[in-house]
Amino acid sequence: MERRSGQASVAVTGQWDHHVPPPVNEGFPRAEGVLSQRFIGREALNASVPTELQIPHRLQLLKVVSRINQIPPADLVAVAIDWFLRGGKPTADDMLPPWNAYTGHGTPEYIRPAEVVLNERFIPRESLKSQVPAELQLGHRLAMYRVLNRLDKMPVADIVAVALDRWLRVMRF
Image (cartoon, rainbow, N blue to C red):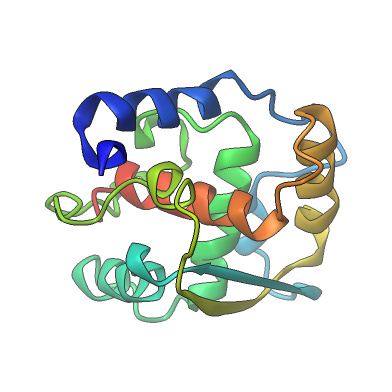
């Protein structure tokens, strides 16, 4: 029960702020730029995320509220993970337009941060399958993130869950 207190949440989420993002170079274009191209090669990104985080629902809510129904959820996933792997600023200001304008009214208070949820022993999960742009090399970059931060025992799905939850909170969903 102590994990639900505000102080424990800060301690658990704070540890993620010390992780080092993989180096960004010319080989990794921005997701916003790749998604503006007409034809995109895609690769599978499969992860199981905690059900409590309501990530698919929050992605759908972002689409409806922002009136971006033409954008598939996989593209939102790609932008979120790319944003996180670039260092994940606490505001949408570093995202290219129009992505920085797709903000909501705030994340519901009952949705605890991913870092807190992942700290529990038994977590109900749901599958998240996305076809993300291959040019972003998200699988490779997530693996680099694990190695650089010595997270060998942490599944990539947990990193994906933290990335999506943090991005959705920045986008205020």
